[in-house]
Image (cartoon, rainbow, N blue to C red):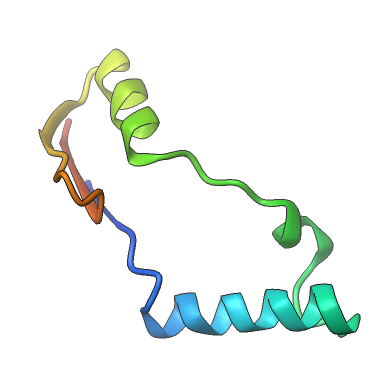
Length: 70
C-alpha cells in the first residue's frame, strides 16, 4: 500500500477551500463531520501497520509518502 500526502494536489486545494468557505462563511459545501476530521500521522499509521503484520518499506524523512508491504 502506498499512502501519499500532497496538500497541493488538486483535491487537497479544493477541499481546503471548501472547508474554509464552510467554516468562515457558513456555506454548506462539506458535511459538518469533514470539518472535525483528523487524520493520523504517517508515524502512527506505520506503527499500527507494523503491529498488525505489515512491513514498513519506506517512511521518508519528509513524511510525504508511506509505503507498506503486507
